[in-house]
Image (cartoon, rainbow, N blue to C red; front, side, top):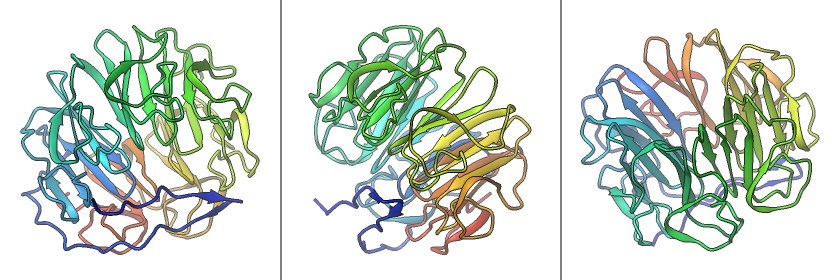
Length: 387
């Protein structure tokens, strides 16, 4: 098996660079549809779903995470093998991806050393494999080495690596097939998984998190790890959306305000400081009117109810999209961006679906994660090839 890219480490507020990896030639893209319904940014790849229900991916592909039945990188979108036109949503993780079909089935592809594809094996797959024993699903989220889903009855189920308790089943035992998160057996509204932790929104609108808590990323006003869900401090009802990053987490509360907690060495909490917090703090200057907030490794972004996007944190590769490489501890406006409806944040890149259903991305692009058929870092939004 090829050596994997390490997940980036953040030490004393500095980003430790990735190892050098050979960039393979871009694969030829299918004839690209012109409109999209959603987009998802992973480590150094991205995926979208078109209005015709097709899943497509682009970027780094050494483990088959683009799903086109190859391990060839692509600088522009390629179709995911065998899924046809019945895809509802897609989620890009570290070195794997998953799709949810309109019939409630989940398919995953890519790296599978810890069972993150959920097919009861540890065999990598460059094309989609069905998750075993899951039943019908209404939401999915691919993390670092694990994946989670919400069934149509609202139970949260996770599979893959569990060394930090990120599967939430009150153990640290890895699982090659889905296991039910302790205490969340019905009514869940959302789930988000990332590096060593996971969070969900319950039927009552409470935010609950589990896994590693070394920087307070579980948000329960402690730094104690938990193998089962704990309630985020002050977020006991009406939470509307949640996003888990590497060591940081963000959410939109009932008043449409953006709140973040956890590690803040690069300003990824957006509160105009570099002070980590084990309970939620407000993102500086945003107030109410927030639809979505996302956080990845070293930066975060928010989508307002008016379709504006603002980002904060580490910016050496332009992931804030403000046409600069200047870091910011508080939100800055994305440069020259159309009104947007969907937002995703990857490792060092960011993407949106615009109101006109085009996909635009910006940031780190050495492996083609921006999808514009180049390897040029983009300091401001550029259209993904074919839109």
